[in-house]
Amino acid sequence: MKSTRLDSRIEPLLREMAPQVLGAVVRRYRNFAASEDAVQEALIAAAAQWPRDGIPDNPRGWLLQVAQRRMIDVVRSEVARRDREAAVAAETPIVVAPALYGEPEVDPEDTLVLFFMCCHPALTSASAIALTLRAVGGLTTAEIAKAFLVPEATIAQRISRAKQAIKTSRVPFSMPDVDERAQRLSSVLHVLYLVFNEGYTTSSGAQLHRTDLSNEAIRLTRDVHKLLPENTEVAGLLALMLLTDARRAARAGPNGELITLDEQDRSLWDATAIAEGVALVSSALSRGSVGEYQLLAAIAAVHDEAARAEDTDWAQIHALYSVLMRMTDNPMVALNHAIAIAMVRGPEAGLELLKPLQEDERMRSSHRLDAVRAHLLERAGDRVAAEALYRAAATRTTSVPERNYLAMKAARLREIGS
Image 1 (cartoon, rainbow, N blue to C red):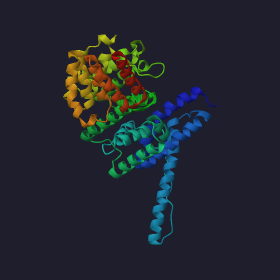
Image 2 (cartoon, one colour):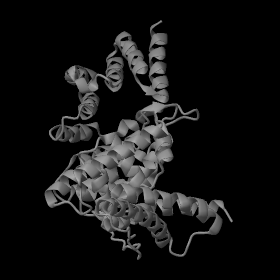
Image 3 (cartoon, rainbow, N blue to C red):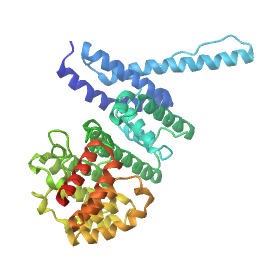
């Protein structure tokens, strides 16, 4: 019998099992594309049958059996094809090879290997994101397409390209060596951060955030943290996600309108997530090497630990951004650094730091530079220039809540000036 309670158990169970089953199948059959298709079929079959028949006693074994049956069909088909070709060439009778039976073992390391494979540097970010969410996250192509508000065919094409790139690169299903592992881990964390950011503030559409995406990014990052508990940057990224996501309930009004950090009702923030995030980043920072995600998490912690907006320790945030600026040339970091400078030294100092960004090609397609300049000009008393920049920023964003907020800011300044 199908029930809400049963359904609520099935989805997270399938998500948890997906990479374990896929890793076991890929390790045995050495064919990533076919194995991934087979596991997706098994997940879809489980989603259809388990609500009706109940969760089996050994759900992972059930999924492995279904996926393996599909792979045996693939192997038989491939063997038969080769035998036919050989038979034609040698003019000998066709003999079909026996099926491969036996359940492959599950190795806890498989999930990490899958992460490294799906986030291979040879893949584009878009392809890596789609493949990671499907292969490691267990989402269907339709679910990924819905989350990113793009046609299902587009996501299918990205996944197909990613699989082809993996096949062409001949990436072995094994743990990379130490040097390559560091590079691959950087790609994994970058992909997870991109997924989280798209969920926390959607780049387009009517919704401010997509909780399904941000939750999935946090879940997958927790998985990586469990696999690499001593890695401080993994801990830093998880802390950053928790500390940022903790504010989600206060970010939107009753009609979905954007509420900025300084105007949020902080009693709505998730105290449990904040406590976990602070503990994670504090532990990571105390263990030596400091990375970008740890610093971003530390900045988020300073914001979250302020009881009121006016209690925010902007001097500490400025100091943290100053360190971060020496590690990266990310223009968004420079943008936030300018905001911190403005809060410590005044809006004019912040505006001065923004001038180089106006020539940065990477910022030309972003509305955020105009929005920040407008905010600082408003604080400096130049309402006319601020209004124009708010309007310019509103026309450039594809997020409806952000566009409405920026247009409202411009309208209010016009009212004050009239």
